[in-house]
Amino acid sequence: MPTLDDLRSTVMSAAQGAMTLQLAYIGVTNDLFESLARDGSASADELAARAGVDAGYVRRFCDAAYAFGLLDARDDRFELTDLGHAFRPSTRGTLMPFAVQAVLGAHMAERAAGLMKTGERPGESVLAERATVLPWFGPMLEASFAGLFEREIVPWLEVYRDLEARGGVAVDLGCGNGWYLRKLVARYPHVRGVGLDGFEENVRHAQAEAERAGLADRLSFRTGDIHHFTVDEPVSLVAMNRALHHVWDRREKVFSTLRDAVVPGGAVVIWEPSWPEDRASLRDPRRRGMAFQNLSEHVQGNHFLRPAEIEEAMRSVGLTPRTHLFAEGAEAVVVGTKA
Image 1 (cartoon, one colour):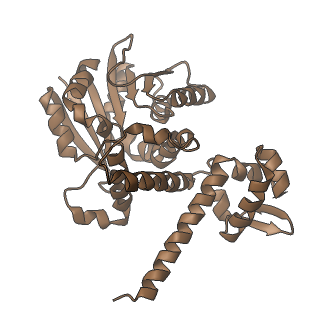
Image 2 (image 1 turned 180 degrees about the horizontal axis):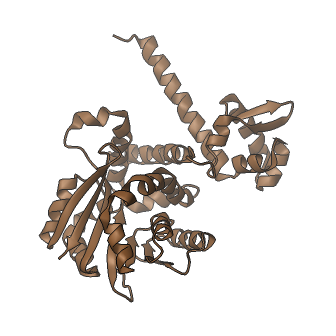
Image 3 (image 1 turned 120 degrees about the vertical axis):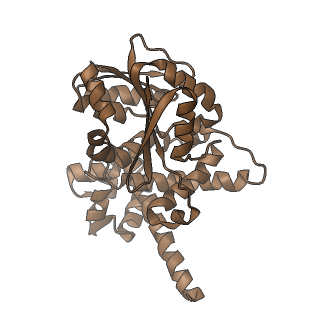
């Protein structure tokens, strides 16, 4: 049985890990890591000038980042360590999502602590309450899930190959920064995509990324949501990626809308975290984050879903569902085909 001192040591280690992620978040969101990577070593004042931020804050940041192993120092000049490089958003397999999740998670924990007394659930607006977080929400999801999508989901699912054969249009509802459609049309040259999102900043970011990738001729993005969208041509596939749980309380109307949006033979593709049947599996390190995020979702008025619930909702509107599990069962993609 662990002693109190053992537990104290464990918690202190966890606390210092949280501080590392919080410092990394500051370095990511203020372009400090990328500035150092581009230009090599710099004094704190030089780094502040390059990044266009306050020198006083950067001096304190550099000392703290040095203490936590994100930066090395030689005299008064700083440079990235291997750990600091790993948090750069441009690094392949970047650790940036962990930094963003840590700060967003702290915000959601504070909100949950206060709201627990009243039971209030303010909705998705809480995501925009921290000005530095929202611009990084889409890049965080892209860095977390685009690799899985490209490596495992796209090659496995026939629905995407059918879309390419049709030369069809895919609509992504709640598209964020547009990463899903960018990956899809880059792989399949005959596919076109339309992305809708409720946050104008996400739409601007998605369009800019499509232009940067040379895909703007086959991609368009606009402000909208599942309840108010129109597309000027037949739609072969409608996707919702980690977004269905946000509108689950209106699922009858939602699934009728999704069914009506696609042509006969088309498909509705729902990607959601796979909430387990067995609570004990939440102690698996791969699922702990899902359990914490489900508390965050409650603040927003949502909760995570079991694949069987999604299948039942699809059948209720005449879609034929099939569930595919990925990431050792933690991620579910449910494909509903329209006869």
